[in-house]
Amino acid sequence: MIINTLLIFLYTYFIIVCLYLMLLTVSAYNFKKRINQSAAPLRLAIVIPAYNEEFQIESTINAIRKSSYPKNLYSIFVIADNCTDQTSVLSKLAGAQVFEHSNPFNRGKGQALDWFFKNHKDAYANFEGVVIIDADTVLDNNFLKEISSSLSHPDVKVVQGFNGVFNMENNWRTALLSAAFNVFNHLLPAGHNRIGGTAGLRGNGMAFRVEILKKYGWPSYSAVEDAEFSLNLILDKVLVHYNPDAIVRSEMPVTGKQAETQRMRWEADKYKISKKYFPLMVRALSTTHRICYFDAIMSLITPPLALLIIGLVFLSMVTLFINSKILPLTGFCFILITIYVFSGQIMKKASFKVWCSLLTAPLYILWKIPVYIKLIKNRSDKKWIRTQRISEMKKKF
Image 1 (cartoon, rainbow, N blue to C red):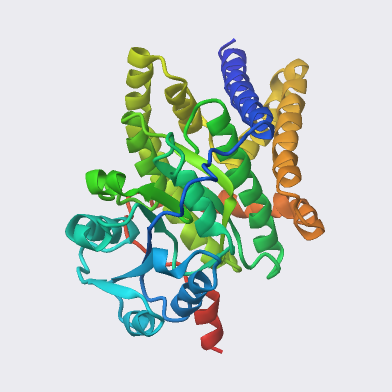
Image 2 (cartoon, rainbow, N blue to C red):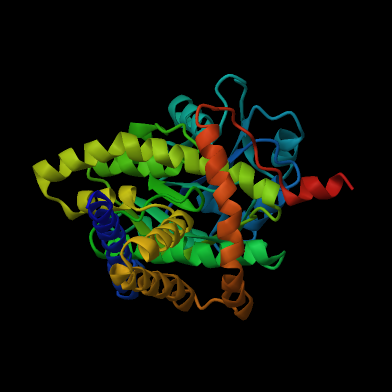
């Protein structure tokens, strides 16, 4: 009796989550970006936080210079966060203004951004918008134009562009990550916006009206500081709006070791943030009844896709021996997940290679199982480890 009750509870949870993903999927198909095409181009400050990025920083700055945006309407600022290489020197040679953050006990992307926005307001105060990109980023030619059009809309104070994969062709892992980004960095933000929620910050290719950063600085220091900041903004009724045509692409891990380092940081802090913000969102929903808080709650209780699939597989194995009559519920959930994943590829017009990479998804899920086990064992380990770039790996050989 107890086991059957537990099975029903778990199936109820999985079905609710999968139906929520289906709601976002349908909504994403009906998404329309908010822009003001008739507005004059804004003055933009482009901020690049960097830690030992001497192999990437010049090409990133050069990509900005090659964009179609008027050169007299933007300036580039590099935050050299505790760098021990030539990042600062190369950034200056490429034409950027460099701000050196030297505090080995308080390092990290969130810490560096907060230091810059709180201590160097004079550097960006005269701009109308602030764009933040990573140091290994390739910008689409119209990225800045799209960002300006979004920030010019009266309802938009924060905008997130589409963050894609630059090195998709490297191997099956990067192709699969491209497929994942089509879902997580396009379908989800589009769906969230369409139902009245926040698109969420995705860490790269995001922009703000200046008054937002003057007010908040960058109050989030975790490995998923972008998601944490998004939740802080929701509590103040500020939504992140999505513009799929503001496109940036960045380098993704090509080896299991690279990916494990990155995932260990992200997944651990996602759990901590969910635990912290869930009661805050419930309280906000109970007092205001705004859809953005319901959406935030559902996002917080929705596990990563790999963990969702692992959970469903385990549940179906148990159900097979306990109560096989309800086993079709697992199939129902998997059908919804398939529609969800495939829709992301359809919306982004994925290449044939990206579609084929979905066949390797079971390998990726199997790889993630020991990663989750390590997370449980090392949940008290707060050591920050930087993900190694491909260019650094090549230099060793």
